[in-house]
Image (cartoon, rainbow, N blue to C red; front, side, top):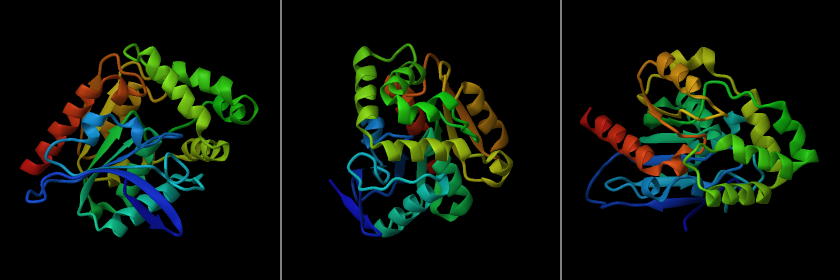
Length: 258
């Protein structure tokens, strides 16, 4: 499993390398609050004909901490990682908080990007006070609440149990930092300045970042396509991995055709 050392901390990422004789657009996947690289489905992490990288942000998964409490700080981590491994211009995809990181990265480093993938996210990510208040006092209660909020009708009981186990295993300070970073995030006024092509993927049953959030992004980004996954919840890439992977494969193919 590859690691990259940034400022004395080991950053872990999953890597799928395709035939080195072919040059396709790399895809970089960034998870959401309290998540890890494993929140992306295997089919997308191993997308044929593309080099795909799935990061564990600092303090998440197998990466060393601490985490961050600012979306811009996470965007700088992604930039430093891409520079460290010498990555060619890539498509940066983010889920939820990862989408906020991707949008921020696109504002700061557009020359590094061929496109954006924005999954179950928005231009503003105001957090329900019940989550922020409960993370210190009743984390298990917040976790059980989130299990219901983040999943749509296609989620299996096993997926819900796995989500809760993962949530309870994440360091408390990392979780708090993530959720506070989301709560302060707001790029609504800057969307017209993000000119790289974007794929917006939303779930019709998403209670955390409703489909209207995706519609807002698609309408205000200068070059964006919207894919609505019927029945998808906030974790739609794990609930309906085939449809999400197909959407990304089509988007990457369109970018390569120019």
